[in-house]
Image (cartoon, rainbow, N blue to C red; front, side):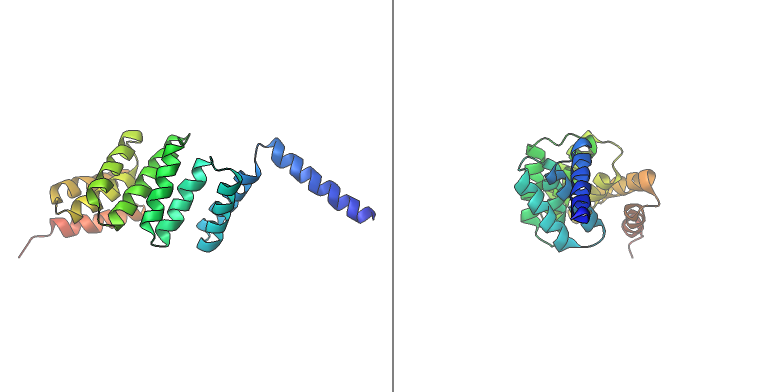
Length: 183
C-alpha cells in the first residue's frame, strides 16, 4: 500500500510539474509527436498530432506538423489543408509561420501547382528573409516551370545561406545542372 501511495504521489508531482511548466495535455502530445516524427515514426507522430488536435483544436503547431506528416506520406491535399489551418490559426512564432508556408509550398509543388508554390515561398521569404528552405522550394518550382534564371538565383541564395545543409548540397547540384553547357 505504501508503494502504491508513493507511485500516486510521484504521478501527482509529475502532473503538477508539467502543469507548472505550462504544458497542457495537448502540448505534451504535440511534443511526443514531434519527437516521433524526428525519429522516423511517421504513423506514431500522426497519432500523437491527431490526439493533440482533438485535445486542443486551436493548437496551430500541431496542424503545421501534421501537415508535414501528410507530406511525408505523399498526401499533398491533406498537407495543404493542415498548413492552411495552422496559418489561419495564426502561428505565434515567425519561424513557424515561415515553416508552414514552405511546407504548403512543397505540397503545392508535389501536386504540380508551381505558381502557388512560388507564391507561398515568396510569402515565407517576406516573413523570414534568411530561410534557405523557402529559396530552395522556390528554386524547385521555378526550375519546374523552366524559369531557369530565377531558379539559378534561388539556388545561389540557398548556397549563400546554408551551403553545408542538405538543401545547400542539393541546390549546388541543381545549379551545376542548370549552368552546364548545352551540347
